Amino acid sequence: MPPPQKPEKIIIDFKKGVIQPYTRKKEVRLSELKEYFSNIEEVEKILSKGKDPLIYEYYEYIHSEATGNLNLGLTIIYPGKIGNEYYMTKGHFHEKDAAEFYFCMKGKGMLLMQNKDGEVSVVELEPGSLGYVPPGWGHRTINTGRNRFVFFFAYPSDAGHNYMIVKEKGFIKIVTEKDKAPKVVDNPRYYKT
Ligand code: M6P
Ligand code: ZN
Figure 1 (cartoon, rainbow, N blue to C red):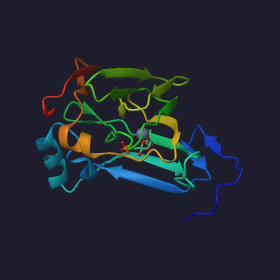
Figure 2: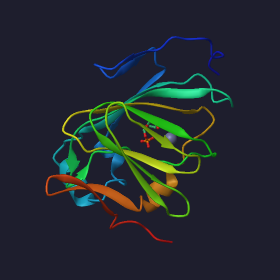
Figure 3: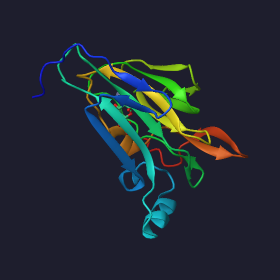
Figure 4: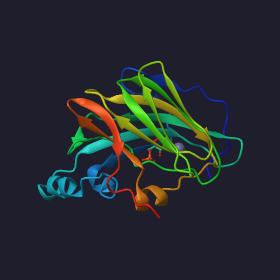
């Protein structure tokens, strides 16, 4: 069990896109996102060439999962597309009803949210804007720009992550490029129960 959280100063380096100190850095490459991108053939084609591009990474400052603490950190989603779908995070729901915010520091992107009733909401993020994810809404971030999309996040430490819903059914909408612009379109692979 990590030591109890103590008062701390955390430096958010807007230029480099890192926080100091952090407790964990996670890199997510295409091979870890096979079930998430809609164009599976394109994913397999890239991986079969021995390529496994870095899609995003995040730095977390997490000391405890006890109620009352906050997890915080910084995510960088790199620019790129798989087929015509922009680089994105897996997306998840929280295990318990818990909100989260994403504060954009660099680049531009979208925060895609959907609740259990199938309502969808998309917030476009650019530096200085903050996306608020209400409790109960699944969320995914997407880089729709040509540079790194960098944002700061915070959420309750006991929120937990549920990936199964997204892994099995996907999101109702996906974000693809059409005529050189981002479009929010129906997910052809969305599994309706
Ligand atoms: C942000 C936070 C983390 C999340 C990460 C990656 O950094 O929301 O909780 O784990 O994004 O997103 P995902 O887990 O959906 O891949
Ligand atoms: Zn979350």
